[in-house]
Image (cartoon, rainbow, N blue to C red):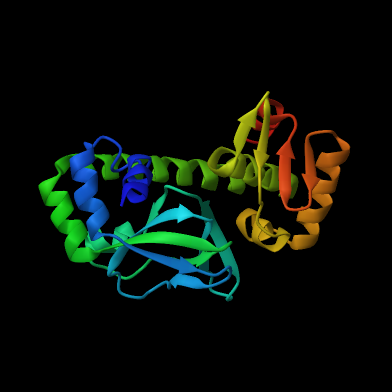
Length: 227
């Protein structure tokens, strides 16, 4: 229980609640593990629960008209997903799958709606979270639509750095980046293009790739170039 309380304290929609209230919320949640590659929820299914990532990474994606996957975002620990269907009662808008071995805390619809009524601060925090996501999505759409392939790949790397990276002495480290195919699906380009562009960035001294670890050596420079 104490682990769940400590975890919830770092979740944005709950961070302003006192410990006694976090204890009540922790009792409502159910932990569940998903192996890498497993689907957590499917686009167009009826939403019955809210998910909070305890550890691991989750890929949010949709299929376009041709059946090609478009990766909308990569979520990490402390982030929430599945909330939209609980609020509007409509079907899931995207598919969420485990990008790595992932553990989530599940709060079911009735319990979550009761929380919103009992703790208005959660609703306010959730609105702020949704507003931030909309702003981020608008910026992402604008950036990706106005740039060439190199610019789109650079933009995606900066987005990953902002969402999942850790800053250290001016450099940003993303411990486990998505596959090149997932990066391509985020950037709206091909895997071969991603490979070529990342090799170019390495030669320019902008990034360094060590296995699945991405180190952005010139974060501020890349941010100015691609955002």
